[in-house]
Image (cartoon, rainbow, N blue to C red):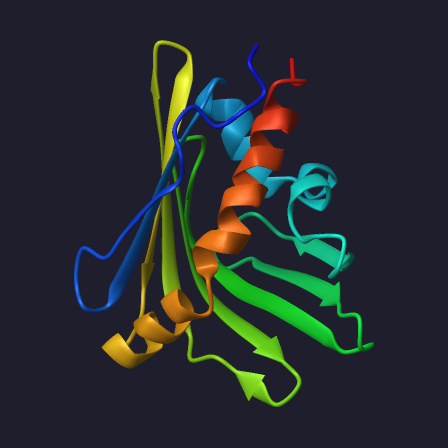
Length: 163
């Protein structure tokens, strides 16, 4: 199995409030879904050397929460926290999320991820719905694609090893 994302990460803005990111993986969708939802896998692809993962807690059920914490080079902790509002294995995840770092906490936004399999390959489409254009643009201008693209590469490497 080829351990890479087939096509470059595609980032679009379908509306003034949305960011949509799409990538294709050479793996069945159940592997991609598991890579996105099981702590033992998430720990292997989320974060980076400059911001190592300190905590990875996932209660994957409607109403369940998750929390990811990352250490920064300056000793500060950044977190992603949310609540699952829809869990349809292995097709779809919907959750409300908030990003926090010292001195800043984002407004809550909705994330919808769909996993579509064709011919043993999975297209992952993630749509982030913000409450305002300003919030959407803030996430875009912060370079979301620069963090997501290497994460997708690490997911591709991970799913290539799954059985």
